[in-house]
Amino acid sequence: MADLPDADPIYHPPLDPYLTCHHQDADLLVFNKPSGLLSVPGRHPALSDSLLTRVQKEFPQALIVHRLDKDTSGVVLMSRNRRAHAFVAAQFEARTTKKSYVAEVWGRVAEAEGMIDLPLAIDPDHKPRHRVDLEHGKPAQTRWQVIGYGENRTRLRLFPQTGRTHQLRVHLQALGHVILGDEFYAEGEALAAADRLLLHAEELGFRHPNGSEVTFTAPTPF
Image (cartoon, rainbow, N blue to C red):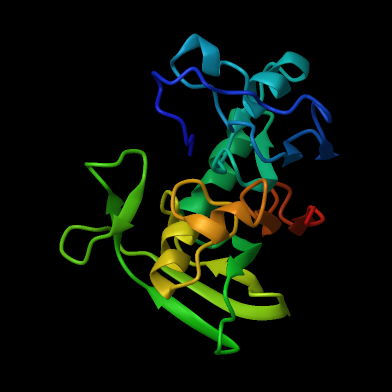
């Protein structure tokens, strides 16, 4: 989802590369969204530039199937017709898609893997931030595994079982290991450790409208 309040015009999306298409066929388009670009335009005119806006200049019938946060990079899927859109969107709704992300987080995560099962809700006092809300939050689950260590940082692969707004960012904050460069949830050294949010949608698998099982991957840029 978009990270910027609709009334906030401070937005400088990357222009190079302008658009990176990894795959196209009669039904689907797959793009690698850069960090800093909205998935869809905001209501404020200053927020009009987005991945969808750019794609529709070349593919006017394109419809976005799912979104990434502005500061998250990686695989984004779009459809080229309403039949394909309904077919794939139903898989996201049913949570049968297979998604994996790569993140670098602050500190050394002691365990090799784990599951975070904490409900999430909008933080009404700090929109658009979200928070763990045990009483009113919507169910959210994230499986994770360690794939490497650096100096006071850990590289994780994340497997979200649900698709709540800011889910991975809030879950890792709750784990005690915020994502590096996260301007919403990190502070101090963890915020200053990277010049962007170190979260990337690496892989997306689902059933294509033609019936085949497909997986698309975008190389992690950090």
